[in-house]
Length: 317
Image 1 (tube, one colour):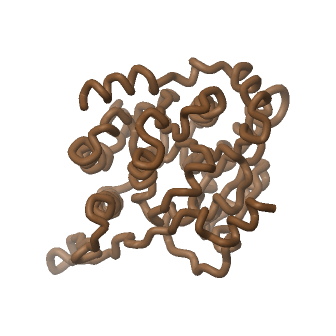
Image 2 (cartoon, rainbow, N blue to C red; image 1 turned 60 degrees about the vertical axis):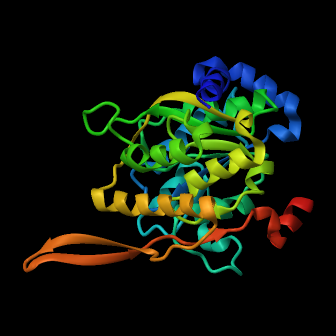
């Protein structure tokens, strides 16, 4: 297994600089409709950062001599700040989560927004980018889209990067190191070569995404990665180094809830069973000692989009 992972790392791990923009444009032109690219930013109260990300993508990858991206959509999942207004002013098409597939009541969670975005976009390559990134570089998009444009055997590409925590290099991604990486190494060792398995920046062919179930919450990244492995195989997966990722960090309790959702996602894929107790108890110190609080753990998954009649009808039109 180690030899397989090492071989995969040599064959399917690249740097964004390996594919210059002129090469990507040529490949996009040759691909025709198969090379259309939709970029999706799932956003919840991200007015401080979403505008700069949208502006960078529009300026460097849509306008002028490098029209790599065909569609830029911010999926607003119920923001109470000016996220939608800022994103629209910067040039994105803003779609509210509740406006997509309204016959199905929305569920809270990032995966829910990503799932619905398949019905709100049209590109044959879909690229997801978190909306809380700071000092955003267009390499995050062109880097992970590149292998999909230039290699028809590649179906799913994750970004890899350094994740500093404050001034400490490489200390971000705590849930990755404490939960996701051990789970992958123990149960899906062929995925052990992914540097950032939980990263929110990845791109995939629509023909793959529409066949995968989407966990509605924080487990979506692990779920998609594991299910992509079983659907198209390791050689169809890849990763691209895009440098450094700077973003807002969660507190310890939020990370605990994230870890629980990710463990649950892995558990379902291991046994397709049910959680005995689908809640997480956490503690705060109050005036009279510790106070217990319980939080529900995401237990819902959306079916493959290819099973949704509205999606099938839209794609057939």
